[in-house]
Amino acid sequence: MNDQDLDRLRNQLLKNRKEILDRVRRLETDVESLQEIQSELEEEAQKLELSRLYGRLGNQEREEIEAIELALNKLDSGKFGRCEECGEPIPLKRLQVLPWARLCRQDAEEMEKTGRRLPPAREVVISELP
Image 1 (cartoon, rainbow, N blue to C red):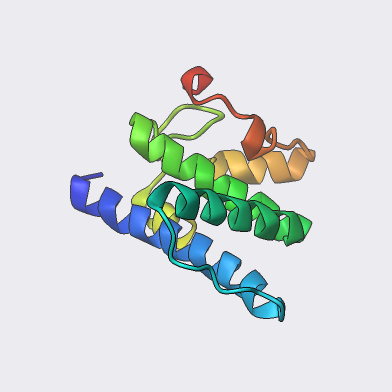
Image 2 (cartoon, rainbow, N blue to C red):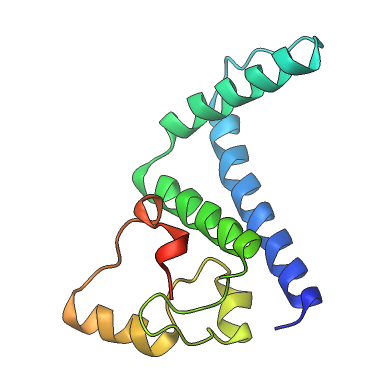
């Protein structure tokens, strides 16, 4: 996987995350507009808004956001695109369809057959990944 592929996948992940958060924002009718203030206070307000929105996400949306965040962290640490089960590279075609994929297709199918599940993305420590 080259740098251009990684950049495309990063952009897709960021777009997916934004779409989920935008859906939640559209459901809210009482969103107050933030006043332009000092950069530190503005950043803090944005963090609070994201935290509030995160709390309003459904379980599936929350899990998807966490998987996207994990994929972005893996991109930053150089561990993106490796199966968490076998450690082999996940094919680019799979990542283009599901950029936050944590397993190669073979291991995903095996886990589905056996009913085993990966730990939630929020519990994954990147340094411990293959």
